[in-house]
Image 1 (tube, rainbow, N blue to C red):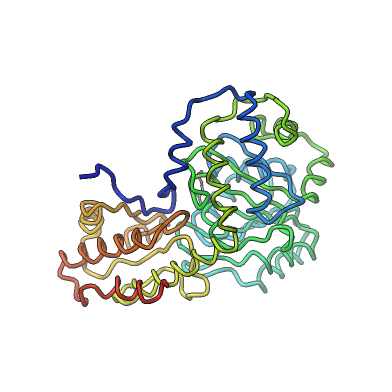
Image 2: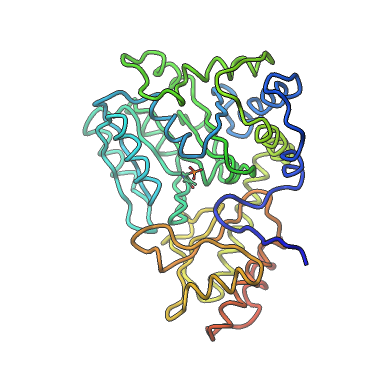
Length: 387
Ligand SMILES: *Cc1c(COP(=O)(O)O)cnc(C)c1O
């Protein structure tokens, strides 16, 4: 038997075998010509996948939270106003990060399973001068998808920078950074990008780089300062050696492989596939009589799904039975509903058979608890909607 379980959580995710092989390659010097090429190529590929030919990409060792931290610590100055548009757990995190750097933070908190309305955002931006706002593209604690396009538009109108936390979205949900005028789109390597955890990835607009250059106060962050990293990114992109902090050589080589795969498939096709599988997966879950956390299909993420347990079920046993079947799913994350729901990631290099196996595991665990449903219904529903 293969000693390996299918990893169907909202990051880290199942990886393409070519990415895993790249991780296992010999570690070269961070200034070796082959590595300089990998780094430079990765920066160029980020521009394609972010759809931001004019943006400035950054690749820095750290998790997605570092990318969140870098975006705001470089752009906000003490006592400036920041608006957090929150659809769950990661909105709260952004509030905490911004407060660390002395920002006056207003948080617009959506009800669980809902998004914040554009009217409320517009009204808030009109009420005072906001330096920046943050949007969580997919909040991993609720599976709610926020459409960043109209929010970025309103932000531009009010001369406010827009920062998109795409940690559970970028390369899985449609993101046209330049076209939509989003100032920072950030993610971590272990989500839809399909690389092991360990890389903070950001693309910053020309406008935001200009705002950073014109700061009156110093960036209150040493490791994450653009002052330290911009010359490094420029050097690698020009295929010159450079050093500030040792880059994670193997991870960046794996990043190059994964970004190349996504680029070859075409980012638009990749997103289309996520939408198709997510739709079919939701139909399958609904066919079992289960409910999802997002209140409307239109705001349900295409990278993951948050699903309420049926009533009267032993949740711990349910998750254990799924794991024993060979599939790893995630429990709840949002504090208020933590014990009421579970989460399934279906992003990146995921295949039809991965999702079929996941649905079979869910059905098998439900059967063990005498939950009433027609056996096989979810797999059937998924297959008839995923062609
Ligand atoms: C996972 C996630 C993060 C945090 O990323 P880490 O790599 O765990 O630091 C931030 N925002 C969102 C939306 C996420 O899904």
